[in-house]
Length: 247
Image (cartoon, rainbow, N blue to C red):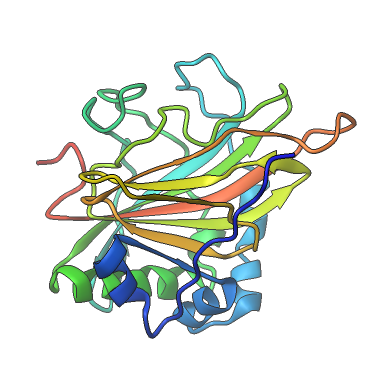
């Protein structure tokens, strides 16, 4: 059996210092709920949005294990606005498998965006980004992912260890069901240090400086041969200046 390493947890008082010192921080669900100022029930109210994600039709490895939705926002201090629906684009420099493609996914459902936790979550993370790098508008791409094991294995990061080409990334575990694997690995982009751990608590979060860190998640497998499982995450990327592909 492969050992699961627990994440090195931060709290809201030390999270920015930890990001400055080591390039990332991991928060338990209680701290993520506090960030939203709406509490744990408001986070749980987001969960149904993962039950109707369309299949990802762009997987170049031929897999059928990923479903997703994608929408974009601008966070400018207290103002949060959703922008007209647009394609997701990354360069080959940051995504060797899917870079250079304009991938048009179905948007995040209005009920999810209207949930009491959604706007405070984006606002709180935007405040962290501004505290770390100076106040400015942040161009946010929100991705809902479900990785399943219906075909025996699911790959959360089929592109391998990577940077996203943004300033900051938040990876929030929505939940795990009947799976094993899915270990998170975070490495210095310009150094030897790295850390591995598994996010197990629903609504716990990895927050990292994408300019300094490389990250990946290992494949998942069903915990039992009797039924497939899945891993749900919300990934929020924050970029200064523009969305990728606009500059």
